Length: 407
Image (cartoon, rainbow, N blue to C red; front, side, top):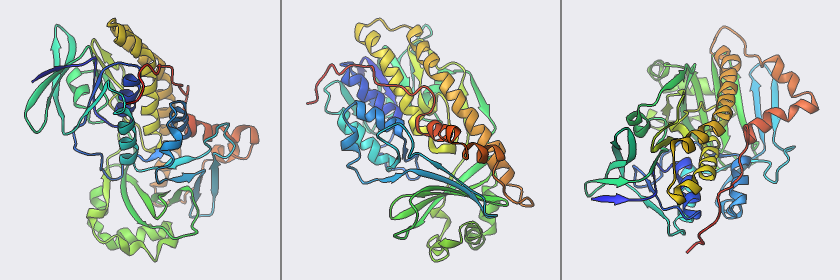
């Protein structure tokens, strides 16, 4: 079956969902294709930073979004087993949202798509796996996708690849890419959280190991940071050794670490960081992780993707509405976003090089970089790290209009 729309978005993650919402709100017919039947994937990015909350507030959605079950976190701590500790606080930000909202990503995506569905120009097709791009004479004009019925063609003047770090559309578009060597991988798991425990995001560093604790109200979501490619060795040592290593870093979990009963509860995230050097071709644009896979450092991936979607809608709604879209419009999206992405990736690389990589030396006692400790002691400088985490670089505002009203 052949179909047509003004914009086809491949992938309904944060970037795809928000772009679909913004374009439909501006009166641009948009179809979002989601490979799965739901959004229920465990241990996806769940940190909604102040910049995203401010964008939702500009859309009149923040209050409804924050009525969902969530945890508010205003402090990020880094401490070592040798007693060093620094705290990065969001409490001094110039924003009505001086916290990170911890919300399961599936709730965030269901919220955004439910709000988008109130616009008649928005359509979400679930269980729709993109099989390839439609291309004629070097111009991309849609996608082929498969659902439970069969294969279909969806034609559109613009196809947006928002299908994540394993992007099928990016691969089909054959865009040039640079990769950064990440020194780590991450095991994710959860243990219960006791009432009265600190509400924070905490990075704990020991000789040879680091753990990140994310407060999820009734449980801790924990990232067990390991050297790149070491997952097999960790599993081979067995669960008893795994649990013991956790307690060597966070001994206060002694009464709960037995909740990890088998390896099925421990999910591996293979960390990668890359960036397209060109995000576009005639008729195609990549955004979010499809354009630049981010390291988990800082938990900023969702928010960078949201910024991409906001800027893309700001620039593209008018030419899409008028039928005048050119590749120079797509290039403008990259120009507006690329510098910010490069700065954040450089920040993540610095943290990986100066905090995480030294931590993997089991014969060396962990120590926090003196520069970080110095910055956080000086009032005029202490707000720089929280601002970078909260807002990134060049925080965008919504400039696309509200042409359509909700049904």
